Length: 185
Image 1 (cartoon, one colour):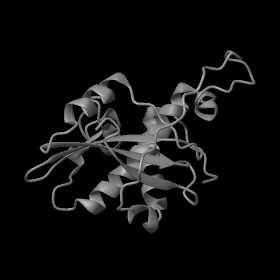
Image 2 (image 1 turned 30 degrees about the horizontal axis):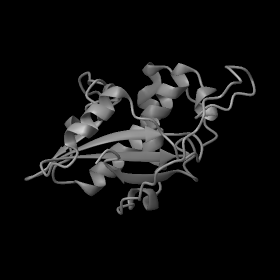
Image 3 (image 1 turned 135 degrees about the horizontal axis):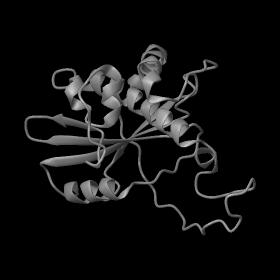
Image 4 (image 1 turned 30 degrees about the vertical axis):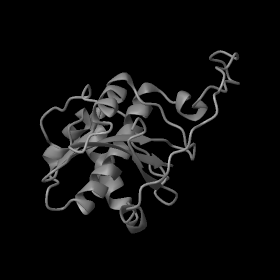
């Protein structure tokens, strides 16, 4: 958005406020889940960690850990606003369970759960994992705890695991939100 922020966690509240103020209504209106398709197998890059790296996520791989973490906050902030809009009767700041919740003054969260948000409905509990990218790459990876939770929720009626995938997260004009069903179901 042509606005500079420090990627340090002490500046997360400012990032949260900026992102909330720049989310387009069409992004928040997204409601239909996108369809997943199987990707072709890719071979690991042989170019190492040098300038010409062509690994699975060269744009994200070029970021520092602090920048990656700040991008994660941007994605979860968009997801926060989306969930608040689509589940107004049950969503609260307590629904945000990851450590980024501290950016809005909530107690520390837990990043080992395999999901970032939990929405309890009458008959179903929804678990949302958020993935964000700074570009338009439509690939993401699930970590071990995320795979474990997705598998535990697969083929059950009581627990539903979903992914909220934000592309071009750091550019409000181009940002896009995709709701994905459990990729392991």
